[in-house]
Image (cartoon, rainbow, N blue to C red; front, side):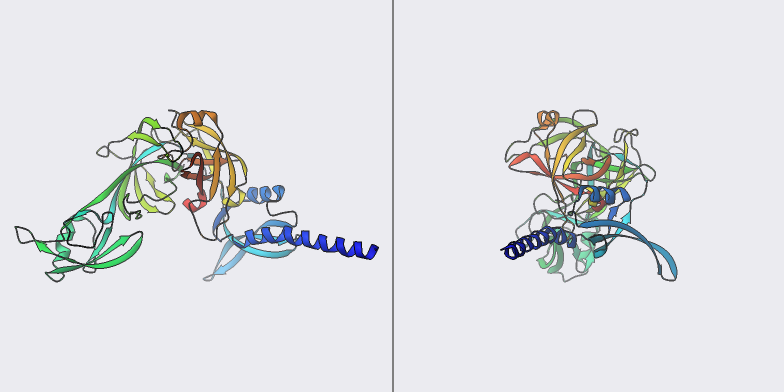
Length: 389
């Protein structure tokens, strides 16, 4: 009988041990190279037993010779029972650089690399929102060079390369001639996009900035707008449409793009816009700075979002209810719930225009607001700040 109990106990123990290891190991295997980390993150993970009691996290700095020169490589090593390596992940060691904390609405004006279709005369397969990037194999740099590119092809038709749902496609478009004999595609196009978002962070030394947390897209097609140039502007908040179920609400802002901009936009990617500020006036509080925190140190529980929708820059309480370790980069990394009654009273939760609002935890900028839950404006998504970099 004792032997039977012992066997049963051993079986249950092994089963529970295996179960407690499988999930954490699966989670660790999804962690990708290249994220931001520091020794505080490692300490946080170990103290909270993020991956269970049997797995420890270690930071190692090794010298390697690359191209005949010594270079330092920093790795996070996950170890089972403290000595069996499970996985090594290369990371970017976070320095002591400080960043101005954003939270301020900004106006955005982009000039696209290409021509955005806004209408046609019924003689092409192109749709509203398609972005024409090449004509007859040559790049469309602005609206003015379309005419010259048409002259390089056949007089009756032009080969057009375009983006639709962020995929590159080609088609032949019949051309016609206007009263002056110039070739035309029979399309109405534009090369500019404007909008409103929120500033996330600004490097205190270089004034490099990150904002929005998700891409600027063409409204009708969802295409990520390729940027040739762009500017950001100071933005005046004139009202808030509160978020409700199935109605995300919005910030009502105005800005004048004919005025001198506050900075240049250099890129528009899946994780927001980047560029350099030339004037920080009205955009940041120079007394409010923080370090950036990598995604390894993000944990469930209390956090803050920073926003100036009340008229001044304030921190509002949120709760992080999920921090994903995705196999591939994604702008829905963090799931959070707004808890602060002040923000709920002001906006109902997360509204359009708040994308880019900094998410802070343990005094670090760890991410930015990106989306709102359509069926519950008190919940939102965020992106890890190291992917914005």
